[in-house]
Length: 550
Image (cartoon, rainbow, N blue to C red; front, side, top):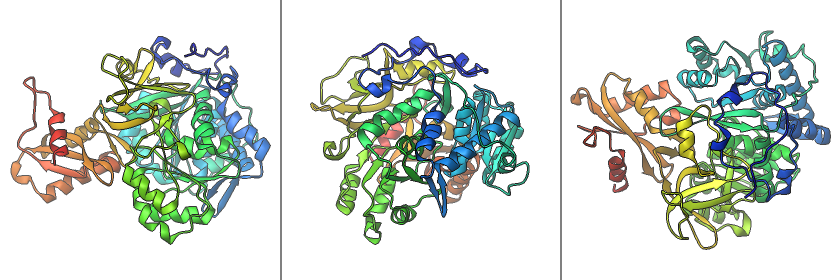
């Protein structure tokens, strides 16, 4: 293991918020670069927009970077729009290096142009998924002290409510709307098509990715410019191995770090192109592959399961590689897809804290049922509760380290839980076999992983407790064949006579209206009392064991 990489670069950040709120360096997992020469070649001064967009436009300017319906954006198109947006950020909105900018849109080219504009300015992107509600936006804006947002016009309602109620957010500029003079497009029209990128240090923070964990509050994960390149120089370069003629597509939102890598970083590093689709269904995914001759597909196991019986209806001859992440890939799903298409799915394990995938194998190295091995550039092991290695075949806690690592935004307690003795502990229980393959067992915390979404049980509980009919509740992940887990709520009502189907729907609709709809409890069970310890703590493990036993 090498010593932590210590660049000599000079930060471009005028606003030192990110530096001030990073955990102390002795609480980071040491970064390993010695195993891959491309990682050691990173300069001390680096802007990921320069590497992924400006330089690639210089090489592949007239090649498509995005297909979006009938529209085609070339690398030159993306560069020009990102430059104009960067000028809007600086000249109209007063954004300076180190400021945070909230981004909010479904997967479309303007969203990506906004993301690169933020990188060019030397600011920090805080991406938010379209399904999030105002209270989630408010929390993130205040936690990261965000003043400015760029938002798809179709998502304006929740954004405006967040601005009204946030102590931080001051304004949003909207795009993909009517194009009036106050819109982002209207402002862009008068701006220069060139921009001098901020001379950021390789370890200047460029991204704060929020994820929900076991505490109920979203946690901000802070990533550097060099991290954006590192995920491509590890998983993409050594496992996925795309080329400039590949065409990518996939369902993960770019606001997820999984989607950022899959649909932006990985294809653009090699001059390839991506088909962006705002809403995927099994049918439209297969239609997209056939229409655009897609060669690389990223989605979740639930989607592969749903698509398998439909494969025979579509020409998928262009499809060469498929990647699954977000939840463990069940063996029947792997076998069913392989039988239907002849393609062995690459199962990837990643985390928002680590930015992207760190365990995976491809091609003939795939061992069906196993997640895979630590990818080049990363190390992984299985530890017991004391941090000591356990023998092969023993279930324990997965620990990993490499060129990316966990750095929480102003969350010392969670940082100490995730990083121990220089290793990142992912919260997964695994076993490693004699050949170094990792086999998933379960989550080690209360995070619910449903159809690729990470959902905090305590967050859902807090919303349900706001309903006047609810006395108390506990939320767990219940096993489900289609989604891996579903959110299930055990509810004690103030008036037990209210129990029934009407109350179930009322509570579900209430949650959907308050937070992202994918977090709502798909099952609700009314009970007389929650199981508790003698000190009054809810015993959620009792409920989980009950569900596991059927």
